[in-house]
Amino acid sequence: MILNQSMERNNQKFSICVDSVYSGRDFFESLEEINQLGFTHFEFWSWWNKDIKRIAKEKKRLNLQVSSFCTKFVSLVDASKRDDYLKGLQETLTIAKELDCKIIITQVGDELANVSRKEQYRNVVNGLKACIPILSEAGVTLVVEPLNTLVDHPGYYLYSSDEGFAIIEEVNNRHVKLLYDIYHQQIMEGHLISRILANIDKIGHFHAAGNPGRHELDMGEIHYPSILEHIKKSSYKGVVGLEYFPVDDPAAGLNKLRNLTIRRSC
Image: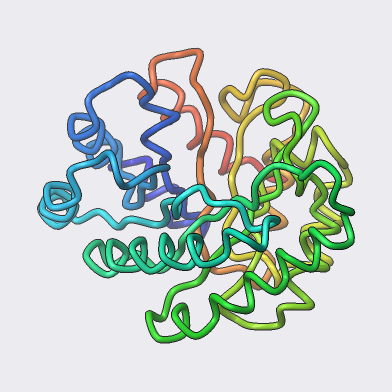
């Protein structure tokens, strides 16, 4: 439990994305290891291909919390699919209640051909506004995720956190915020700390991975000790999701995170 105690002293809470950090491994054996390593939060991507009742049972037994998972992958940029999106979100919120999860992740879909970005932007805003009544009733926050289009997600509509923050500001509801993925935004924009701190009130969740490669946080060009220190000192009270694909054994990489978080920023 040394790892957990170290992170508690530094007021930094992490959520392990099982689908990436433990990719290809048994989901429930991974939860056991996450618990043994001293972490208290985990997350995953899709819920519709998982044994939700068993997850609910195991998280209770291991005293773990589900920090987030995704809603169904229905386009928000396409207004004709809005009813399908809302139906998928309602189904997802039923699962969120069962797992006592308060953060749901959404993507917005790929850019549409022959439709202006202005119209697609408006579709996203209006779609998110339509979600507010059911999010408010459920007491859940929907976090909108910009993704990089240069390496992992060519054709995706929302690649700029600046545009993402503008959407969140226009929707203007505490139940809709941005998922700031540090890996994706290093690829697309950079200036990570300044953007994070200027918009911290609009951020509902973080994801983190090293760049290039999307591996452990201590691999690559992103100086995570400094970024995590600034997040810790900000008004943000949520977790930082670890969504990377490890080079090392997952446990070895997660143990290294302890030393990363106790270092002061330069």
